[in-house]
Length: 424
Image 1 (tube, rainbow, N blue to C red):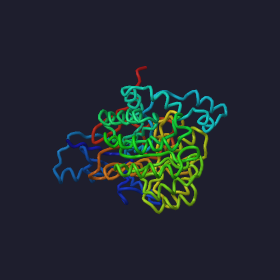
Image 2 (cartoon, helix red, strand yellow; image 1 turned 30 degrees about the horizontal axis):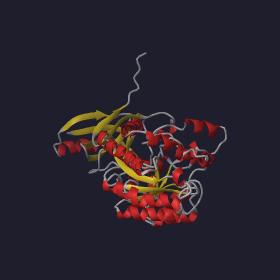
Image 3 (cartoon, rainbow, N blue to C red; image 1 turned 45 degrees about the vertical axis):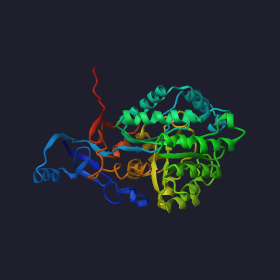
Image 4 (cartoon, helix red, strand yellow; image 1 turned 180 degrees about the vertical axis):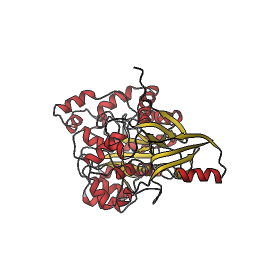
């Protein structure tokens, strides 16, 4: 079945130039088509102007099963949220209230709160409870335009608990239409029972957790929190060497609290992405720019915990492949709304609207090894896109704080249809 959407006021395809990822000045090129059109089934057959599409339909004698008039609408690729922690139990609203009274995120973590607070609740949760918690946030993310998402474990810090989180993610892959990537993150923090024996816990990750995760084929990636007070470069390197042997690709939490050289290290070891980067050094930025790594920034996290924003302009100027993600989690960025992330990026990290769109779509897909199949609107790629109720993509940024999404399509199916109708 072919669907034909015509008269699109603003169609941003991100289809010209590099089809896999953009860096530096290339991020400005979003390929906007006025009075655009798209023809698709599960995959995209054609993108161009409405006039060109109508000619193609006649010349190729295409059988169109459904036609949609998108006058006054904008279509962009679906958001590719490449860093989330949406499978967890409990909440940390009490910690949030304390931070509003002046207590820092670091101070709360040192008291045994933060990640360890969520750990206690997640360890007690059943598989079904974790599935339902993750599903609720994933469905909400779709309503705001997310079509691809990465989800991490890391809130159990025991072998069985980490497996339980990853099994929940596997179940979400079966139940939801989203393109989902899973990440094992036993190295999110050190559990209290190993507080005074870090080496033993690292050994547990390497010799027990990773083999068990690999045996059930539960994770695409392995991640570690490399930062002040968390994992050292040496500890992370040992964990990643083991993960690679079992076929997992590497991604990292890097330099969120301080510059420990994690971003540069991530580039050196061939990680797919280095994330957070609030304190990434100039040296690390140069290393990332010269490598294939994706520099993923999460402005909602900086906003939520009142930290400095990552140096986006430095990274883009250096030629890094920059992505944006939500970091949706219960403690430091409790939002699944990628439209909010874009707004924070343009205002507080001084990115342009075009750079932000590229970072949240094509480059986000690259950070999940998905950009060959999604992240831009080009023939042969999946029909994953958003129909927004605005005349121009700029309005998504201009009128901020609301949901502009009318419809979300994933693999050619209309998955979400938001409505603004009222019964008054």
